[in-house]
Length: 296
Ligand SMILES: Nc1ncnc2c1ncn2[C@@H]1O[C@H](COP(=O)(O)OP(=O)(O)O)[C@@H](O)[C@H]1O
Ligand SMILES: [Mg+2]
Image 1 (tube, rainbow, N blue to C red):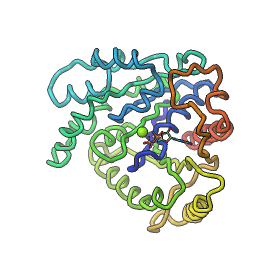
Image 2: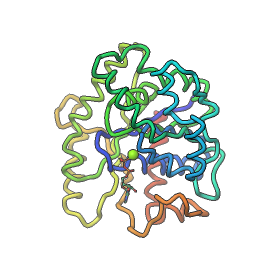
Image 3: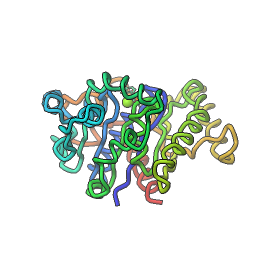
Image 4: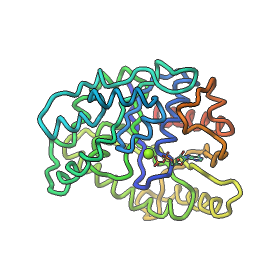
């Protein structure tokens, strides 16, 4: 059974995309798993990290992105075919990997986002508008993979709800500073209320938290150290406590060197170790924890 896991945070810039893509690459290259990444963010960052510009342009021009999936739903057209849209060899490590697939996003989704959020505001969200992705991402398709990782936009709008509706679990990447962690309890409340909404559509729906992933930690920062200690003490609190936070992944991802080029797809790289440099062991351990937590 393939596991579906969403990467969520209502803030941008915390590392949802970078962490999702890194875990996807470690799962495939280091642990021989078969992975599908779904890029639900109109910013298309996961897409840009996994395929080259020309491949993306071609997919976009031929309506083979998730933009078409939402467009069809809003306009009653039927151009989207998920089998055709999934790109079956991605990544810039060793020239790509046949076990790392991508359902790409499109910047055109920005235009649809407004229309989709209007639906949300007018309470037109119903049995038709949330399960859009679930109509295409069938259990049979999910089971072709060991993991389906969903990179969500930084909100809990209709697009993200589509992602969490098909997910078994979610993780929250965070930067260990005061501003980035301040809103965690409110975010958990919002996710819980979204879960209740989704449960009304499907009573057997369930979504569980896998934990917080600490990203961009600065070793020398006293503030980061204090925030980390604070988070560690709060994970032991009861779920109902207002300062509760989900269990932290033990492996911490440190702020990488400014010379790192992991965000540049054009660089051809021969090994995972070369690509992730000093972060290699931390990502590898994080991926091991990720596999064991999602299989509990
Ligand atoms: N561990 C890290 N060290 C340094 N830079 C990072 C790290 N993780 C992410 N970044 C950078 O931070 C920025 C935001 O990351 P991103 O993954 O796009 O966040 P999000 O998806 O939450 O908006 C990007 O420029 C990314 O390359
Ligand atoms: Mg992102």
